[in-house]
Image (cartoon, rainbow, N blue to C red):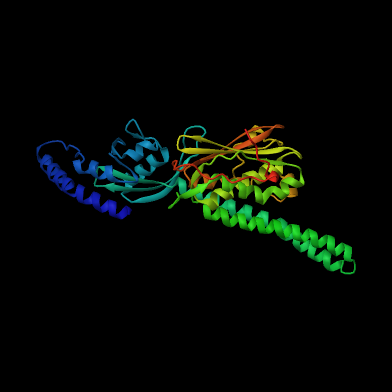
Length: 385
């Protein structure tokens, strides 16, 4: 791609270089040499480049710069604003050799630096061309990939190591039926945890591109909540937790499996972190063409300093409690990606000691008449207002 751009620039500049040479040859006989000006075609070529590009004269003045070059802060007051890039241009001007490298461009406070690849080449005797590609996204993706692999390896060690230890213990306790039953039960718990972790890793890998849905379909919200409550009411009933939802008749627009997965993770988390005998409330309200689906609990809450990190993969506010409840630290990350793939978002509001409310915003199907509202069983704790 870069070679093609240089070829195009060469065609545009070729005539200008020849003309400048002839002018300079004539001026050698008549007076001082006047530096040539850039042909008009250069500006046209720079304007269509996706990469950042700038042309510098022999006084280090930036004569032309593409819009992306200005946007990412490479140019300021017709000068190169990045010292490393300015030095690279000076080196190319001195020896005429094409140079390529990668640079880190600082940004304003609070923003991560940009990672860019740079190719600098001479244009005749007077000018230097710099092509700059922003590689920040690739660097972020690679960093996320490395962290993800490291975290997966770490998380898999715990259940795998536990299974190995328990299997050795069972073998040593072969003559003690009671011990065998006890350790076999622990092996069952660890294998379930391992299965959940692997399944959520697979689900997350399918969602992490955040690509928009190709063919969104109608998803009756009431039916989705009923299904979610059916899957979780056993755990809730065991702790006396009431699952509450006032039917709305709303119909979402999206992928039923993904939305169900996100809602299930939110409700499951609410149950895990709620106090015994409390209520987990699911509510929905319309805002323009979106539906705000909220899941509220009366649990321990989240410290303010942790709110910005809870959607990270494998991040846990209380690392001890998820181990006891079988949590993987992936549920909220999955919710975040489901929201992104539907063009929505997920937010959280929490007060320590009082509980948390997670709100998942999803697109709503335009009204097409009344929808059937499925009945909720007493175990599902329907709230009527």
